[in-house]
Length: 610
Image (cartoon, rainbow, N blue to C red; front, top):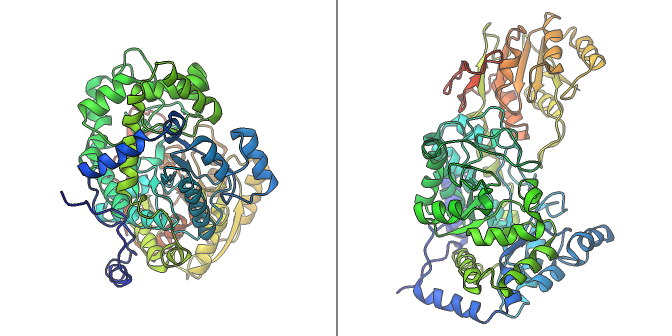
């Protein structure tokens, strides 16, 4: 049997340049489609596993965080953080001690400061892994969903997130966004992305998914999930659909509590399953579990991450998925609160998981799995199944051949002009005009030259340059307007509102950035007070598109939705408001009425244009 082509097969410089010129996206190493390993490769991987000690086998199951911008040579703060949480000084020592299969990057762990640093960290960690006796490369992963969840910020290219892409509705844009993101991650030595979201957001009150979902229509979500799987995997990295069996209809955040989803089996088949089925048909590399209880799928009401009926019975046996199953973070309270840090990894493996992600106490988790195998609760054959799946994935990604990246590759790939231009074009096509009753838009520099931008300033996603008000004002300034920014926050008090009202006097229009407006929110009071000045007020919902329901009746002149407050989406909103681009986005979720959530204010597909 011929040896399958690796997904990370290097293109020649000429081929890469040709692809970039033709598509506007630099083609990464690994543009070939995914291939299953052949029998010869499987035999080689099994021989590697057979030569491992039990400790080495257990280590391959874990994907851990580590503090610091490099694998060695850390400052004292990072050393202290590693010693406190992991019992080691740095990433190299972590790998040598626990024989890890993977590392996950976080901004708060100081892993993602700039592209060259990230590439250096990846190379240093891979060198540490290859110094082990079996020379098994790492899978390096991160959560780079784009939109509100980004671990790698500028100067990497920032792209619209899932719900924005759902508003755009373009399969080609959705695939291109994933291709750009995957190409840049691959250049940084990150070879598994925990994206795309396959959750169908049917609950407007969902506190943890929301705009991270492509929308509320299962078939539409499934179509876009397929495109992102193809985009990421075509760029040479592993895609991971999440959160199985579906986290879209919950009002509890699994980071802090245990959500229960009371869909019947029939409802699950209709609402939650289609995107996961589609991803599996598209040969997705990996599936991430959800820390949720779905009684219709497991009457014992065990969280899905720990549920054998869900992970083995449904995901493996019914849906036929034989790729890598990774847990959501084991540091989340949804699984910790009842089962504890020692039992969670053991129960997850018994349920059918392959990768144990980010346990809060790695020494405890690692030793618990080791003891469970030694004591016979978990068979060694069982963990070898999971190790084989992860080694197959590493082989398919080309990591056994060459896990390293280069500074030249970073410079030729990350944040390059064609990628940024494509991101701007995609963002314009996602911006949604929800209401413009007086046909105020687009604004003219002749009649609306002097603008005030006020509103929310939530904690910024990675890569944003500052508060949304400042970003919007700067974008308007580049378009030839005189724009002043005044941050009033997500809960403006009377003093902030009065300051905004005073600043609005003499302006030609006011743009208000709103953020998750709810009943009784003082953001509504701010909008009402600004409308009372007689200056036209335009609201821009910078996260959930549901804000407009709580602003109905305030007298706003126009309302838009951007689905995130990263720079690329805010710049696109400014161009739309200024008439430099037409609003093409339409709602991918219904907006219910604030006074009667059973009634729809704006349906799926609603969106105005000029």
